[in-house]
Image (cartoon, rainbow, N blue to C red; front, top):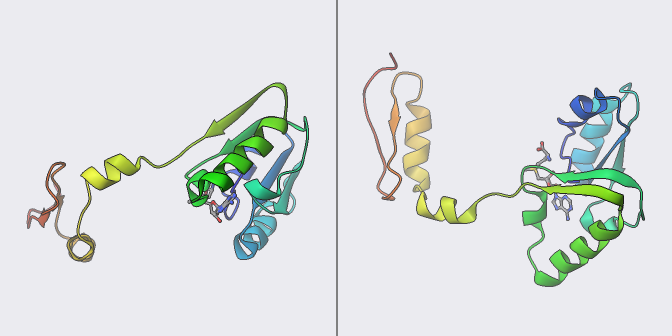
Length: 143
Ligand SMILES: C[S@@+](CC[C@H](N)C(=O)[O-])C[C@H]1O[C@@H](n2cnc3c(N)ncnc32)[C@H](O)[C@@H]1O
């Protein structure tokens, strides 16, 4: 669910599973379709949580790397979970992988600091602190 450009689909299909990647973004869905063309048992559906109408259809539903977080209202989340609840077979599994927003807030870095660190990355090492937003770049070379 929320397969993006489909990077995980070939690996899942390699287990011998039939894999349906759901992706509401039409551009990502098209890219995923291109990626999995020729991968046996793999397909891509243009649609997301709120388009899921299947009943007892999947052994596993996985939403990896934050698709659920794209649902920003309580009613959308409730609707999504209602749909997901009906979609697996009895004993099926739903795996949801979300960002840890609390961690992000605690470890928040000002964008200009991040940009400076990335720009200097080839020759310098970024030093970050987990408790303060005032992060700095060191000039130490990678060893
Ligand atoms: C960070 S990407 C992760 C893509 C993929 N799972 C991966 O790990 O490569 C999050 C994906 O969630 C999708 N998304 C956004 N709204 C969604 C929704 N309502 N239902 C399902 N997926 C959604 C986005 O379009 C995006 O492709």
